[in-house]
Image (cartoon, rainbow, N blue to C red; front, side):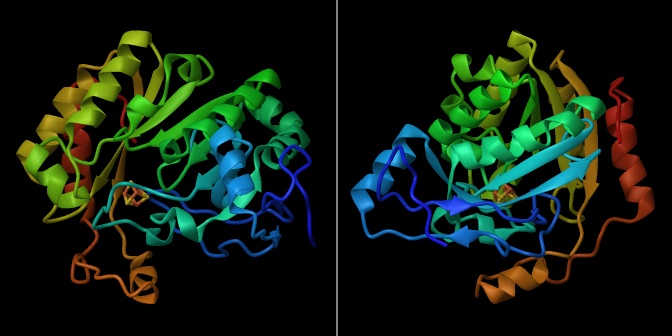
Amino acid sequence: MTITDERQPGAPVVSLGMPLVGGSHERTQGHGTSGLATAESDDRSARLAAVRAGDVGSVHSWELVTAVDGPGTRMTVFLSGCPLRCLYCHNPDTMEMRRGTDVPADELLGRIARYRGVMKATGGGLTISGGEPLMQPAFVKRLLRGARAMDIHTAIDTSGYLGSHLSDEMLDDVDLVLLDVKSGDPETYRRVTGRDLQPTLDFGRRLAARGTEIWVRFVLVPGLTDDVDNVEAVASYVASLASVSRVEVLPFHQMGRDKWTELAMTYELEDTQPPTPELVERVRDQFRSRGLRVY
Ligand code: SF4
């Protein structure tokens, strides 16, 4: 089916069909973009203009979830593209923006409007995840504004590495940030992600200073992020952020392994085992000992 975005003639657009199972930093997704009717265009300049304006974004997938990615029943939209290269990434197919599918913001906002009733009834809303959503700030801005105009609760799931892309004006439309703090030690952070820790620390502090609610996520990988001192550094930092209301310690698993193989990417955690229940409790206790609410 060919669909034309009336605001940007010629721009490649996609109509969302059936709900899809998506994948965040910790979950894996199974159905990719099946169910989406796509339309491609050779008009690259029109597409670029639409992307720059935030009218169109590169979307990996979306799903309806309950008690995941924020409170209540939520529509989680997974955007394509990420500047990090986490060794444990469960969805490496979200790393490259070019692998996504162009979707108009209005298409997603129309879908949100359809589910508004259940979102309001359950205290749910919209979560924008990825990949790294802040690779596409104009698109994120449009989605946040549109959701806020419908009085829908909004959340962003981010590593914080591109936190500077989220303006104060955009933050006015954000109710909750799911902040992935992947390590407390800068060297470990670089080993895990290939990037610097500092932008994430700065972003968390900025959120706390504004009073924006934060849920922190920490992926526990034996032999990589489980060092006592590394966890202490994360816990110490998180405890210093007054607006953190929840910490989620997420045990590493191997469910994303096959994707690395399919993409012909080198997967370094082939032999890494999930953490034992004892290790998970030790790490959760490290957070709890700081008075944090831990899951
Ligand atoms: S932040 Fe890391 S885990 Fe999340 S999508 Fe990017 S590379 Fe994957």
